[in-house]
Image (cartoon, rainbow, N blue to C red; front, side, top):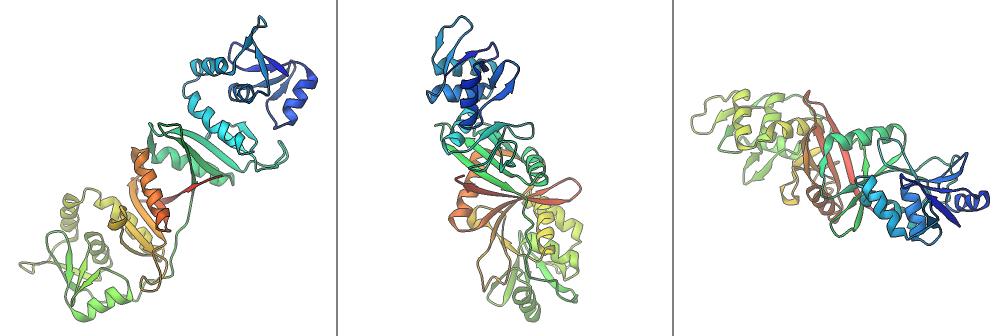
Length: 353
C-alpha cells in the first residue's frame, strides 16, 4: 500500500481498495473526494510501522524519517505529540486528532469510530514546559463536562512517557461542625499558637481534630488559629503581655512568616467546611493531609497543595507530589484558590492506560 506526500506533510492514499484497508485496520485517516487523507501523525506512524510506503509528487520513495523531519519543520511541538500518539497506538487504542482543548481523542479498546464515544482526551506535554494550573483546570472542566477522562502525556528529556489522569474530585469527610462554644484564650508566640485551658485542649483536639497535644497544652498552627479565631472559638492574645491580638493583625503577621498563608487559609477553610479533618502535610512535602474520619481510626486519604489560580511550576514539582502521594497510598489534590476566594480541586494520578 502506498500514498503520496503532500506539501503540508499529509499523505493521500488514492487507491480505493488500499484506502479501505488502511482505514479498516485502525480507523486511520479521513475520506475525501481524492481518497483517504492521513494527517502528519498518522502518515508518519504507518510509515514507521512499515504499513505504508510513501512517495513524493515525483514518485521518489521516502523513508519514514523523512516524513518525520518534514512534519517537525512544519509543526512546532510535533515530536512530543508524535511520541504520545505512537505510544497510544502501540497500546492498541484508536487515536484521532481532536479539536481543543486537547490534541487527541482516544476510543476505548475495541471501539468503533463514529459509533463508540471517545474514552480519553489526551494532551501531550513536554516536561520542559511549566505546569500551568489555569490551563490544566480549563481542560479538566471541559473534559468533566463532556464526561471524558483527561490524560496528560508528559514526555521527559529521555523521551520516556508518563500519563497523569486529571479529575475534578469533590472531597468530603464525615466530621460535622460542633455546637458553638465560648472563646478560650490562645496565646500567640513567634510562629504558632498555644491553648492551655485543659477543657479547651480536650475539646479542640479530641472532639474536633485541631492542633497537636504537647503535654498538657495544645499547639495550633497559624492557619488553624486563624480559622478558629474566625469561628470565635479562641481569642488571640500575645504570649508575653496577654494583650488581645486582632485577627487582621495576626493574619498580616502570619503572612510575613508564611507568604502562602492567605491561600492556605482559604483552602483550609474550604476543606474544613466539607467535613474533613485537616492537618499539616509537611512530612509528605505538601501543605496539608486530610482525613475523612477520625485520625485516630484511619489514615489520611488526601495530600493537598494549596495554590493560586495562576500557579505555574516546573513539571518535576508536580510529578514529585503525585509520586510521593501514590507511594504512601494517598490521593494528591491541588486546591486552587481564585482571586474571589473560591476553591476547586484537581486530582492527579499516575496511571498506565
